[in-house]
Image (cartoon, rainbow, N blue to C red):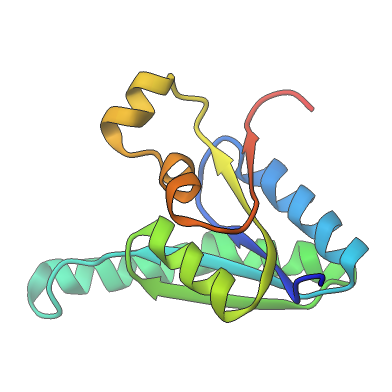
Length: 142
């Protein structure tokens, strides 16, 4: 059975633009919505840090999700935007489950495997958590 969406992890990684382009093509070819997900785990709900975190989320929405929605809609792909108060990998897995995703697409930072292991790469964590296919799109050349 084919999934009912394609989930894309929205971030500012070097592979983000290429991941968006691939996710749009996949969603268009499957004729399913593209679910744009940004997972953030803000600090506690009160105080200066919480306010700064909310401002950063709003800025992210304007700078990243707006252009991503426009690119998808220009290709005739329906979109859903979700900003989730959780770390990126669990947020993507939850969104994929909620929207019955065929695949989760993420851009990657082209980091060394050791650095990704030590610092907690989202792609690496997704491969551990997800029971759905995960497509990791590197930045750089086409």
